[in-house]
Image (tube, rainbow, N blue to C red):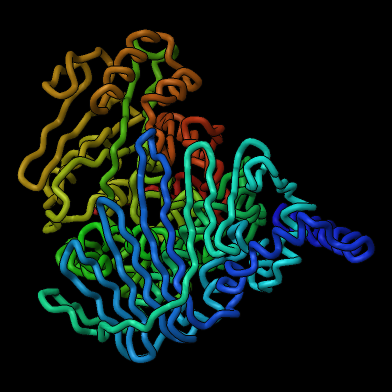
Length: 619
């Protein structure tokens, strides 16, 4: 039985016992008082009031800095509402009426106006909206039926009998240990909740109908959208955000179920997903979608809907339009075989082809570290290539973390440490013993070239030597600004690369660089700021002693940032990789590494071996 199901069973059992006790012995005065104070709020949340205004002042701290958010929700009817949210750095207004929905960004003087039919599954109609915003993958779903019931006696009973909320008569406030204090006023129409680092002041009043006609925004730039797209963006963005903020057991400890389909297999190795894919681009894409549909959808929701909504509010531009514009410029540089694989994956997932194609050029602006050490720097002379991916654990990509073992017909087989729904590469090693890792820089929007993740995957598929890789980068149009560490375990060679659309620079082991400092013999070390200084210090401290364990230590905090999404240690000469993925509460550097043997995993492909999974030619 999963943890989330167990929680629900226990909650139901306890609630039944408490209700029996309450009805047998009668409710005490505290329960009656709390029920009375909760009644106005629960009537609003439970849909028992058609018209009301709910105002909130929220204060909380992020990295020690006080943040203030003001919000107001005016429920006007069963299909109309106004929502205003303001912060010192952003502001958003949602205006919904029976005929249209508008998302207004006052700071950008922009309105996204959606007309037409709503999406049948993901819409903003007030009635029952909580069930569309809260999924079973969020712990909030456990309490949703209770809140929706709108019964203050039941909620008061649970808060007092099960959660142990207690009345402090000296302050006339309700307390949960030393963590939380709640005070009601004005017959429950005002609520003041405080903890050590947060405060919420909530007030309820009668709603007044909006006098501003929908669609009248003088001086604003109005962007017309399909209403279904606009409402789906907001509903799925909020729903995925709630899953990330308060994940249920199915996300924290997903069921480790193996699966086989034609041209693919999903394995769990020491708690990590490993997907083995092989065949033509169409066969690989189809198997990808069949094996990882749920994980791919979470990845898409994280990127397109949660991150995309925040990015739209931040920039004033519709995120999906930005992706489509980027894809239009990048598409001519993407191999036909990659497009075919993405089309097949989209069909397998039941998604629009254009959606999956654009998402696979999602601009990765990673802030990362990497190194390659060998020869005199290591215990055994082997090459150890470390790759630290520091990128937005806050959007929940860890829920889709998957290491792909891919054997495409006619090209090199490879390991790609990535995410369900994404076919490009940011960290990988192929059967030829070539390994690659990237680090993002600046230059977002310079998209007239080969997407970085496409170039990385092409190198895994097409390159047999380090020289092949450097030639690929030098001979292809590039995008943005990226830094890389490339290595070849067959020859114990490695190189650092600084690449922009207009220039490319190779930094060889032992070579000094103005951004990287003095060279270290038999080592390439890339990072930035204090993380670079710490990484260099560690390499020099353990010089000559580096093995797999020490190499993993080199990537520990603070070289890895708090946003550390995954770490990989490649030992390309042995075709081994060690992978650590972030959880919801720990960066990858604080999680266990899992050893994966590329040769053994490729041998699992029917009728195949390592020798069968290397390219005959490099084109």
